[in-house]
Length: 173
Image (cartoon, rainbow, N blue to C red; front, side, top):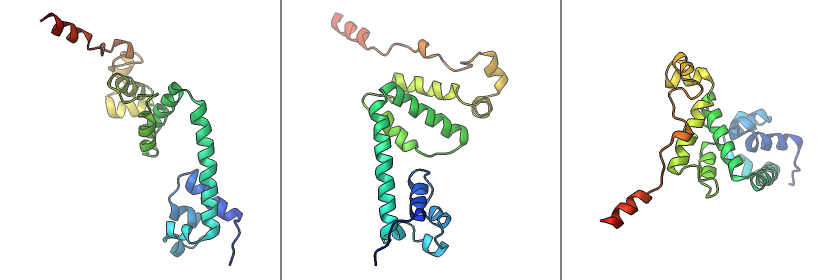
């Protein structure tokens, strides 16, 4: 029995791949019975049309994502990671954090090196909505008195990370 990909199959695949919905919820919203939807990934792999539509959607997503990453400069990719993390913190969601972490580890982006990590944390905190920042980091009035940076350091005030003075002191002894 050969089944063809229908609009319903494409809708389920989009919900899973593009929107990040749990498989069972996407299946139910796509018209699959709750009993069948509980089978989750097994339901997708054993239904040729569903499997094909998910594969097609994944290929399309990978192609679009690849274009973005090839075009985006390391600074732009770093900004994308920071923006997603700030959004996750502001909304209380934890979606795509692992992907952001991996993207931040890119040798061109180097977000997790000590001096860059401090700047990133400061950027995330300073770009949070005021009510979120006040909830987690103190009251908003104190933050307003200190200006945009508030009680957080400025990126230009970071101590130098060079270890050259230590090398010179070893040579002279």
